[in-house]
Structure formats: structure tokens, C-alpha cells
Image (cartoon, rainbow over all chains, first blue to last red; front, side):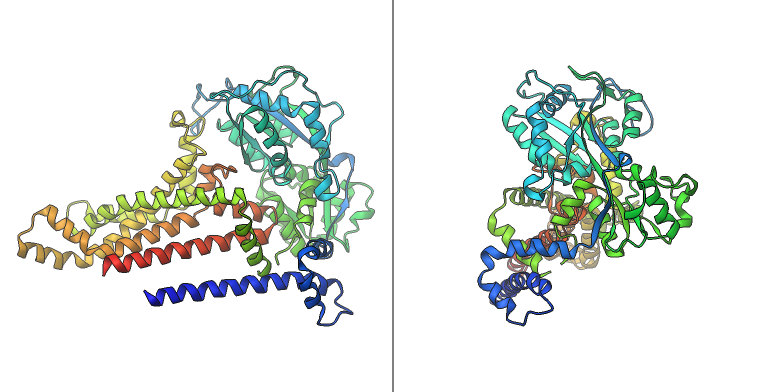
Length: 358
Length: 228
């Protein structure tokens, strides 16, 4: 009994000490890094005294130093990244895993309508357009000029329509846009939005499996396939199944030294050709996501890179198919000094998070 | 690492509401799944270990095979069964804590069964002799065996609990890692890692370890009291 108590005490002391060291290390790091050339050893001590207010600012400064990955190509026509919503049709030709037709799939159509209508209110679009200004000093999403708007009433939730299942891509969720917008919707109308986030391919697959009421994704070809297969429906007040409303840009990032000379390439297509030509390391999502689909469309056709692993078997000395999320791929690109295609929102969030492991 | 420890301490100190929710879902999931698995695994394990009956060898092999089922495969099977188009769709269980518990029970029970079986096989002989000498009924013999197995029952529960709290493949699949509902420590760590926020991921990992430590200490104390 006594022995055990002593053990607990010893352990908590060790943990406490670790925590203490951690705090010191952290406040010391940014200053020593920033001023490594001139400062002497007493720098950490002085920062310790003023740790309360100074820490955050210095950490922000150092993030610019820590992350070498920079945006090399952006705002190119071919890099447009459009986000669309599609409501799932309960009468869709659902099939189970064996391919047998399933007719009675539960889809919360009223809830999906309410959420889509709310997202298209002029006020909501304003909120989305200004999101990111405070945290990242840059807006992360723009509202499409021809985005439809909704001016009508939105019904409050009932017991039956309360839970809305939204299947979306990682970029919308990881950028924090949804956790910024959705609580306001939930509070005003009493709904609960259950967000599952995965790459666009998986997000659409979840809807085909009857596990979502609406999807919010960014891959035109995959969306059109979904609509053409009869899985979508037109909601009240809209003209098409696919409701495109937000956009931002994909950006091509790479090491700041830019060995492939991507920055000077005339177009993004030229930039990709230059990377392939010089066999500079490139990190591909490789997970069927919207970003992956976009990347595949940017390689020179003669390389023949597709989703099929066979197609890039000869390029593995420079082409890495990571099969991972955007953040994980960015970390990989940073570590390997490689090029990478990413949506701008995730990249800015990544830089704000400091990018690397401490 | 240093800043991760600091972040972990800060997270706990700030009483972040989302973290508290994640912790409570994690606790609910791992405690109940390991308890259910214990209730199933202990009698099953004792039966397999102490009794001789036709088909026992087959059951043993089957159980050991189930121990090797990759969690993600178990998750996938449950996902397909309970999906909106799956045969069990009317139960509306996908993306709930209940189905996470169910998947965990399927993963953990074989472990507990095997754990108890190994022990029971060792003590079955002496226990049977004693029971014969005392002229005990079958039921009483079983109780005697159960009583003799107090110590491994505790370690078995810890085994199940540790596996449940650390599991990620199955629960992310059937639970969907939905914030405020089915997001547990491991899936939250995955999310932060995917966002490139490694230090917050490590911070959550440290909290998970400390929780595990607390649980282990508490149960070890109880084990000493009850089993000695």
C-alpha cells in the first residue's frame, strides 16, 4: 500500500518536473532561434519573466522561420477550387455491398434542405467570405459571384428532422470553417449537424452508402458522376442538384529555394512539367480526394499518371503517393523538401500551427 | 516534446469543453466495452480451459484466430452491416457510441477468453481434485474455479480496457469521429495529426497515458485487496 502511494507521488513529481521544463523550453526556443547569432545565454531567463504575454507573439514569428514550405504558384485559372453542396435523394438507386437494390434508406431531407438554405442566406455567405481574417490575416474562402442565394424561411428542427448528417471533405472541416459556421445554425434552429470528414472520394462514397443527408465537396467530375447516377435531388428554390457556392485556390507549394524553378514557370501546367522533368520530389495525397483528383489533371498527359498505382510505378524515385490527409502530406513535403499541391485554406492553417513537430 | 507536455497541462487546466466531452465518450466506450467483454470472456475462457468436450479444440483455434482480426476489418464489417444501405440499417446504430462498444466487444472478448483459458487450464486439475474430495456439485466447482481466478480476472479486465482505450481503426470507422458525439481520444489524435498539429496530438496522447496509468493503479490496488 505504502509502496504504491510512494510510486504515485514519485510519478506525479516527474510529470510536474517535465511540465515545468516544457514551459521553459518553449519560451526559450523562439528567442534563441530568432537571435541565435548574437544573444548570449541569459536570453531565456529574461523571457521567463515576461512569459505571460510575450510567448504567443514570439511563437508566431518563429513559425515563419520554421516552415520552409512556401506558396510558389497560386491564383491561376486552372487552380480554381470550387466547393459544392448536393442533397442526397432518398429515392436514389442505393445498392448494398453486394450490389442488391435497397429501397427504404432513411434520409433526412427536411434537415438537409434547412442546412443548405441556411448556408445560402446572404448573411451566412458574408460570414464565410470573411472567415479567417482574424486568425490567419487572410480570407480562406470566397463566395462565387453566381452563387444562388436563399431569402425564404427556414423551419425549426423537429424530433424527426433534428439530426443532419453532413459528409464533407477534410479541407472544409480542418480549416475550421464548419466549426465556425455550424454552431450558429444549430443554436438558431435547434438542429444537430453530425460532420464526418474524409477525402472527397470517401465523402461521396459515404453518401452512396446511405450514411449522409447532404455532401459538401470539391471535385467537379466526381460530383457530376454522383448526380448522373441519380443520387442527388434539387432542393426548393435551386435550379440544379449541384449547388456551387464557395471557392478558393489550390496552391502549388515547395521548398523556398525552388530548385525546379516553379515560380518562373508561365503556367501551373508548365510548373508540373518542370517538376516531372527534373524529378524533384513530389508528394501526392493518393487518396482519391478532391486535391488528388486535381493534381492528377495537372501532370503532362504523356506521363500517364492516374489513380492506379501501376501508372506511377516507374516514377517512385520522385513521386510519393502518401495516401494520407492534407496536413500529414504537408508535414511530409516539409520534411522531404518536396513539392505539393494543397488547398490554400489548409496550407494557411498548417503554417499557423507551426507545421513541424517540436 | 516539452511543449507538448505543457500543452497537455494547459488543456486540462483550461477545462476545454470539447476535451471533456472526448474524455467522457472515451471513458464510456472503454469502460463498458471491457466490462461486457469480461462478462462474456471469463465464463467462456474458464469453460474452454477447464472442461473437456467435443469441439473444444476447434473453438480454441477459432478464438485464437479471432484474436488476430485486424480492428479495421472488424470496423468495416460493422460499417457495412449498419450502413444506410446495410441489412441492419433499421437499428440506426451507425455513428453512435453503442456500435463502437459493440465493435470493441467483438475485438476484446477473444483476448479475454484466451487469457482466462490459459490460466484455467493450469489450475483445473488441482481444483477438480479438491472439488471431488469435498464432493462439490458441478456448479459449486465452477464457483470454486471462479474464486481461484480472481487475480487473472483483474489483469484480464485491464488487458481489455487497455486495448479498448487504445483502439482506433474500428472506432473511427463505425463511430465516424463526429465531434461532440463519437470522437474519442485516439480519433482526435488522428485528426490533429492529419492537420499537421503534432504537438496537440502528443498532448492528447500524454493525457491518454496518464488516464491509463490512473486506471491501472486503481485496479492494481483493488486487485491486491481482493485477490490476496
